[in-house]
Every structure is written in structure tokens, then in C-alpha cells.
Image (cartoon, rainbow, N blue to C red; front, side, top):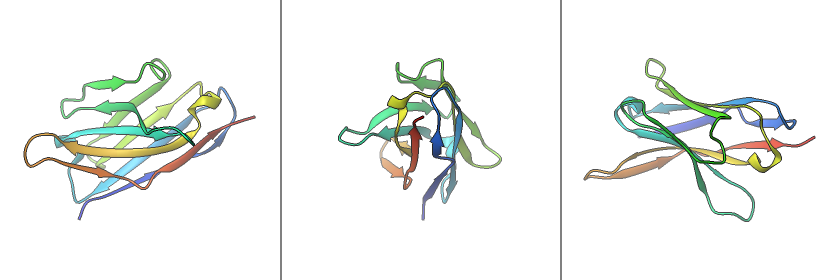
Length: 118
């Protein structure tokens, strides 16, 4: 059974930093593309960043230069380092792992709340 568990969310002031973690069980992160998505109230879930099996990272324009996605294969954990946080970064952040080749699959974590406010 695949399980993704996010942690590290919280309340932070504008300009501050947080590091989110996503620990996996039942699946090996390094084999697949893993990503972080977020969903703000009243908005659709959107891509934040992904990291491929070859460690190629991709970012949404809104977070480029501020967020960094990384993976620790030994811990089977993916991280999202978020710096220079803005109020518009407030959302529930979700970890995701997917395989697009057949048989395809997608797994999601339960989400962690990030609130950027003074």
C-alpha cells in the first residue's frame, strides 16, 4: 500500500521560509516523477514543482527562484524548500508521485497547510 505523508507546513510571516517534507512508503520515489502541488481556497489545484527520476527539476513561474525541490533517495523523501514566501503562497500543499507509462498511476498525500501572513 502506497502512502505519502507530508509535514512541515505552518504559519510564517511574509519573507520567511519553510521546508516541506514528503515521506513515502510502499513506493520508491527515485524511480518516478514526484511533485508538489497546491490548492488555495476557491482555486484549482496547481503545479508547484516536480523532480524527475533523473533529478531534473521543473517549477511554476510563480515560484522560480524562491522554491527548490529536492529528493533524498536514502530516506525516500522529497522536500520543498520555500524561501521569500508571499501571502499568495498560502495554500494546502500536496505531494504527488505518478507514473505515466502503462500501467499508469497517481498517488497523493493528505496535504499540509501553509499560511503566509503577518
